[in-house]
Amino acid sequence: MPNPKHKHSKSRTAKRRTHHKAEVPTVAICPTTGEAHLYHRAYWHEGKMYYKGKVVIEKAI
Image (cartoon, rainbow, N blue to C red; front, top):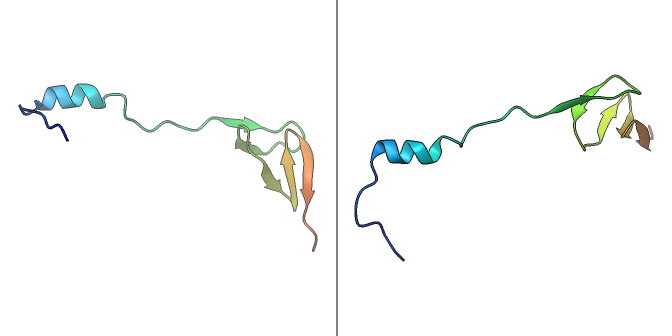
């Protein structure tokens, strides 16, 4: 396995890591329920699972 011959400086390492950061997830508001949810994800609201504003699953009690 190849290894570096010389030590990388702290500034060089920092330059490589500048793009490694946490991003805030994009949140959508459902037009049907008004619930905030992640894009392209189904979500539960009052015992029903919604996706793209339509009921996908109803919870049987």
